[in-house]
Length: 174
Image (tube, rainbow, N blue to C red; front, side, top):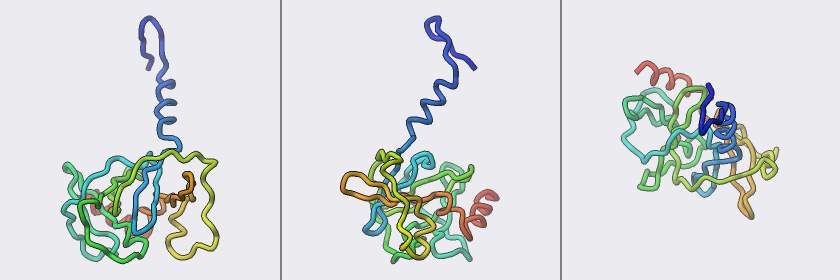
């Protein structure tokens, strides 16, 4: 579709390119435990405060259950438990970051949301090969911001493993 403004024709492609560029190199940063993490902003649909989570039986401990978000049932995963960190009680700083992966919404419980930051590709390094355990498969890279390092997560791998498919099916059914 073409738009016209002051006798000037403008292609849709012009706007689409700008929309994509506004999210390029942007990451939502948050804290889990003592570390700062980041996910690409293009996956984030919204950030909400912690709310009532309905338990779903026979799920792994890191799948806390489901929430009703404006009439849509969304599975919720506690990132702290996903990384095999000790559980802690939720407080007024705890948030649910709702992400969309392949059209499915999933809530990620994090300790504290920080900010949206720019991390250009040339400031991201691959994770060290010495990293062990489950966490390494979720790490996309290490983003350098001044003297700080943010652990950049691979959202696809984080939410698409093991039992998440079954709880997404439950949410779709509901």
